[in-house]
Image (cartoon, rainbow, N blue to C red; front, top):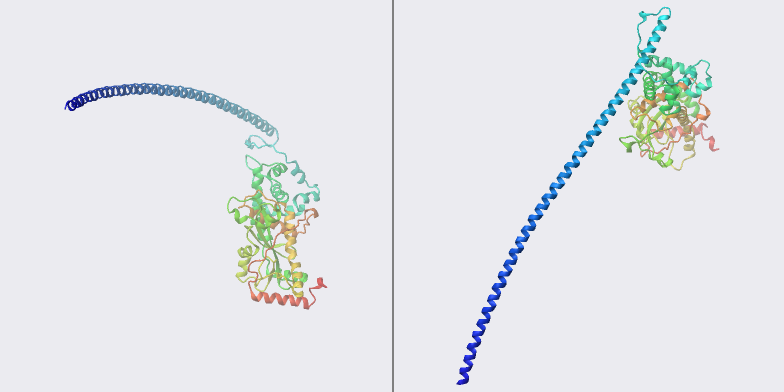
Length: 485
């Protein structure tokens, strides 16, 4: 019993002790919580102070940067203002110099004019009635070379070497073109004479020299030379082409037939046809159309060209030309675009032949050689004779390019003006051929144009039978085939 009572007393005492300890722990936790809260409040106050200080510093920096920017802007504006003032002063001084120099030039010109007037007055028959003539200032250029060429005693061989024709032919062209290209003198300057105008054009076409060299030769400005070349070429095409480059009349056609038949034995041939290419500078538009693939592959250099299709008589005189189609077009397509093809469609070439190369199709009016691989003796003989007719066109184009060197190189003439220049070259070629102007041996040109067999080489069954009949008659009458014996 005593033991139980003691144990109960000990338990109550222990509980009392535990309660006391729990109370102490609670007090400590409250104190710690208050301390944490106080610390947080201090941290918040410090953060606020730091933010305020940062804001003040940021404001100070912004104001500093803005002030610095204003300072620099002001300095730049001041510098620009000073620069503008300096530039204005320089420009004003240059203007004054130009005015002074212009005044001096005018004074000198006035002095010369006064001296000229006094000299005129001193001459008999002149005076105040003659009036005062104002002159335009022109740069003094030497034209000694042309003055020497224009002398009657200038050697004929040298004249022909310079202009690709004799003096008589040159005079004929000047007389023909006089009404179209002659200009009148004005009160400001004297007009360029007709002979000098024609000479500038012929020299440019014959040599292909750059305009700056032509300018030095004739004592004229570069732009003036360029203008003269185009004007004279246009006059040649307008005035001389209807007279010297036209499809022949019936009486002349009969004579052409007889001459070609005498050469080859092939009847009813009225012309020999060929297409050549003229190199040009790469155009700004439609470049692919003017790209010449065959010349590029052969020369290993990118080439652009335009075509010139021509029909010639036995003497090598052009009777028809088609100029200006892009160099990428094959010969048969150029033929289809030509006025010659239109003339044939209208029935004007019925019953006659125009001989072409293997690049043309066989048609009712176009006679071409056999192109298959395995030829009979008759076909070989026919190709031999038709080649003699074809040589007339090839040699004519070789003389054309040899005589007018501008056709061998890329020219400075614009693409839209080139057909006029090429047409003028063909007309001048005809005049030289008709007047028996022989080409110098060193000017001979080797003609190289790739011929491509058209996709549709046979356009008419009747023409195939007619060709076979011509080939048989040539061999049967002993007019062909001798080269194989």
